[in-house]
View 1 (cartoon, helix red, strand yellow):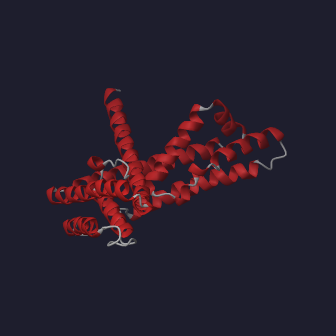
View 2 (tube, one colour):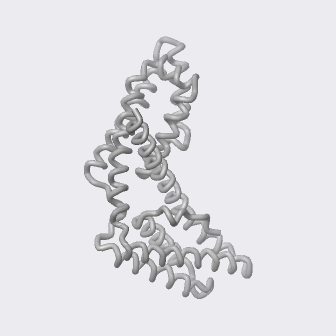
View 3 (cartoon, rainbow, N blue to C red):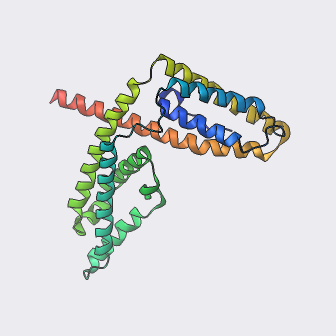
Length: 248
């Protein structure tokens, strides 16, 4: 029912988001008809414990500096995108062809970065760079349209953002004390118990409401898994770069 969640790699803020979402979803349904009283109580109680363990509850640990760096990469993305649009109207048919090719790649659903959170956008940008750099056709399109400087600027702004984000991740990691770990464990227990409950009740009753509950929680769970994966990738890349520097 509820997808596997990377609990062991989550930060406290992600536990907070997950528990808040689960509590809000359960509140939408008839607790008597669906026998949700106990599961709702468990999730709500775990959320309260977590909130109390966090002296200052925040949805994220974004600083103004990180926000400004995110804006920089957004602006660089716009510069590249709108430059390519202008090149798609070039009088040179070859430039037009390559510009349209890049625009088609950028306009895919997974590249709607302005609707994404920090971590999801980072993962998306990394994937975008990998696709372009590994494709002879797309690399040639960057060259032919004269957009290499803008493309490299976007890469640079993304690297700067990732480095600052990595620093904030380390700060966040340090905030997770023993009390926070205990509170996070309570959230995990409540969510896993809810998963078992939904599965059993779905089998017994066949009611679609249980599927609906799981589906809504899974939306947030998938976002969190994406954030965790992106964070682990950044940490791994940073470590590899550090080791490479030491051996140079």
